[in-house]
Length: 248
Image 1 (cartoon, rainbow, N blue to C red):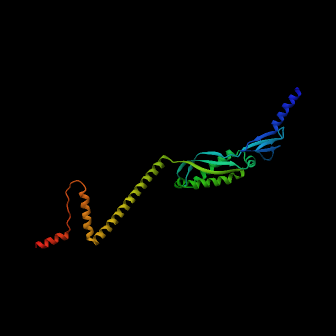
Image 2: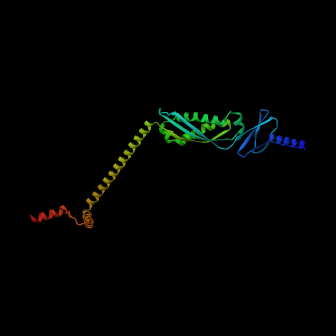
Image 3: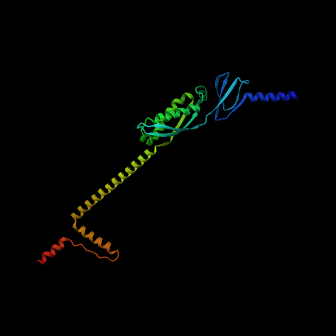
């Protein structure tokens, strides 16, 4: 009886040493006597016992890598702090094990140096206004350099650009001056349009004097609808000149 119990424990230990379960989102890179025989999984994997086979599991899910703030000097010699976030995933587990010691750390360091390099090649105005283009450029550079590691960089996003206090104040003054300039331009355009309309109205009245009389009557009607007030009725000069001629 004891023999069967010992045999049962031995068999359980044996199967536990040769069987591995790999989830759907992982792959197991198997090294047999130090030599890679490929990536296995998902599901149950049978390994040779006694350390002949060794398995290294690699996750295939997307990794969100937070790139810490980097001190960057832009092309126009302005010091800023820039941080970003990188989204990548392993597409070739064998390369991720054989070609780089730690693909996660290597991708992080590469992202930091590339962020400083790319942002340092543009001026501050473009860095603030052309984020999408810079994101695409960062993604392309990282993706090319991490391809040999079996890593696919899917997206890079600049998170925050911190400016010095004096630069923030200068930009605030510049924005205020720009708003004042636009307000003056809009006001001048309004005055020009009003002057043009008045000029057109005076031309119309000059061509048709009866229109001026109708305008007088309309003005009297509007005044009469208000409270009691003194009305000064304008008399055309040609009427007064006619009366003066009769007196003579």
